[in-house]
Image (tube, rainbow, N blue to C red; front, side, top):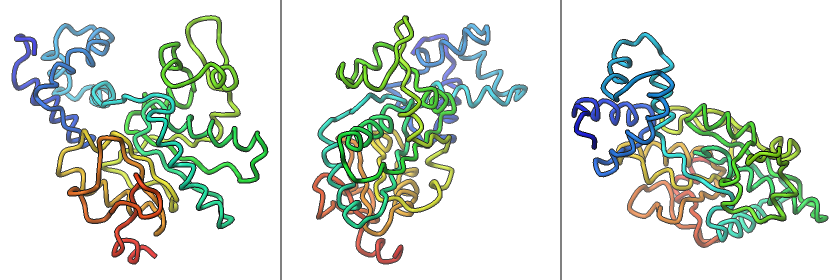
Length: 279
């Protein structure tokens, strides 16, 4: 950490992030304060993080706190991230479709939208190729208003589309504008309902879901924040619904409301008592 930062400044900013989102910025990752907040400092004509914290203390601009949190929240994502997971998702959704019901999917912590748009591509291609199953209803939420605005716009850089999108899908679902940016076609974006929501503080979207994706979100939450989030995710699922976590995440030893699924290996189901209570 740059020596010019007062320790109180670091504590204030990390505490703000934790209070608003439940995310914990470990001391060994405090370098992110400099890199993530540099554009905000420039936009506000500030020289140091100490000056930024002074502005926050003043309370003269309520947007400042939201902007700090937006900048600090971890928004790492990519198209078709961990591609094998999408085979598991197809299997889980197929089981729901066999009942004749339209599946509902919630992407919690969707960042700039690559994950839900990947799902939309996957299922839209299936419909296009003659599949009889309907498009699932896809709801995607994130704590960052900036990220959600990006997701709704469907606009991505060349670097972002190169991460996970083969050229065939890129040309089919995105339009180039003569620069380095690409924009998802409206017919793709309309399949996703993007909403701003705080996974730690807000209720789940209305209704029950057959599948909830919450990948690589829990990794950054404090131990105190994790259990309420697990409860929210469990409450959002149908009794037979399934939870998808990131490759480095597990429910084992973390919560009693979920257990490894017996039907789709690698996914998680409500624990028997939880599912019975929700029925």
